[in-house]
Image 1 (cartoon, rainbow over the protein chains, first blue to last red):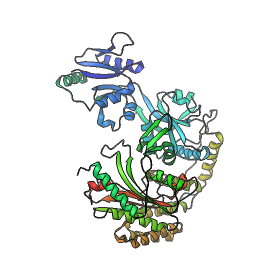
Image 2 (image 1 turned 30 degrees about the vertical axis):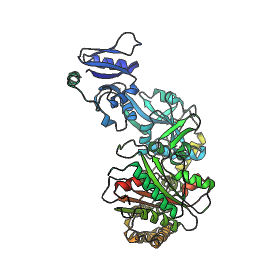
Image 3 (image 1 turned 135 degrees about the vertical axis):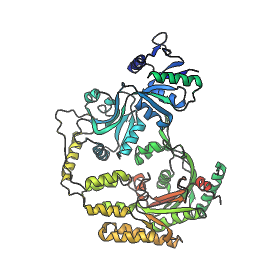
Image 4 (image 1 turned 180 degrees about the vertical axis):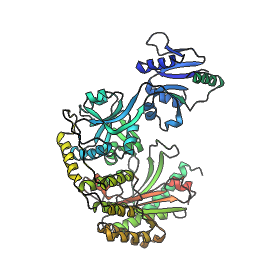
Length: 228
Length: 352
């Protein structure tokens, strides 16, 4: 059988991944029209391209339905419990850099650290009668991070997009999200807490630990690794 | 030993019958609990420990992570005092780290709501559970969160600092961090950020209030090193109950604030002895029960299998007066209870 390589199916992450492999003599391309989610691989034998949503790649790797996959560290850590037992990182690819951070309004001059956030959350709950809300889509990572830091009296609210806008819209008081340049945060009058960086993420090539390779696949993997 | 559901349920029924014979009424709370109550009580941490599901009609529901909350609610809505309840059924615990831990298991519980003699109620619950485990190789540990709370309450420092420490009694690491922070002199540094727009629901006067509180608190003297040592001395106590009580009474000399709480430990020891519990062999650890999520605020206890660190506790319990206060919107009913895991009893090899 062929070695299955999962790659994000659209956008900059896909283009950068194609470039990264291209620079190593492996041409990845979409077959047929731009709208078709099928791919071709040239320059190496026995490797098949599987185009997937970046968010689904961790799950597919863990299930062993793809052997290799490209996706962000943030998504692997968020979506896979005990991720290091399910996947092995092979290469950090040097793009798709993003930090997972906790940010609060710039106007909160009394809050610079997680310690401040905890104290402000206690006072907020007294005044408003509900917990301080933090908007995020990284529920598991944020919960573990805040538990480790001893922050209490907060509640996570789900936000799958435009998270920086939730504070001004009064559906959350703070946010936990990924940022690369911080421009969107600043534009929305938010600041990162001094100790509020949870994870530094980048696009990474992962190998599934939950799949048995046959001899052909093993040969293809060795051929591929030799090129990277 | 491979324990079947049939065996577990049979043992659970037997334990319930024993609790009924001790005067408890059998109750059966629903498996699905409104998520809002549990979230309000435990905060976001409960989501990591309980399974959440939902429908369009009732919104978020949780598969019960324990029976205590629904039993308290039921008692407060319709119960007469004093009251004793027993129940048996599955609880559900989400597991994200350790695949070896059960995410669904049977609990059998006994809860007492009684105002007049808390020491006797504590002893009653402990002795009944100890009796139910008789013959099994178990070791009991007891503690009392109330002593630490009394100590914090009696510290010579600001209300702000006491409240912060009290909020984190159940998070030992954060408690320690705060204690160290409050025991050192620090400057308040407020960034002077001009021209920023304040967005969101937290208003300027709330920010100003916290800055004023921080400035005022900076004038408060650090918590004395001697008091920090006394807290350590308390948390280090781990000895058979009579010996631990002696150490607690020694601490009372320097910490008059804990005198009533220590008197409660002494009264409990006597009540336990009256119930036939061998208190000379019963461990008391002052830090016991601080990492449980439960709102235990007085007596706490647990039974573990000796020489089987791989097994979860066979039984745990404690006093949760504050929980009844929070669920009862100001109405408080002193309450103490405990749960047994019949599945673990069987695994340990005791089907008696």
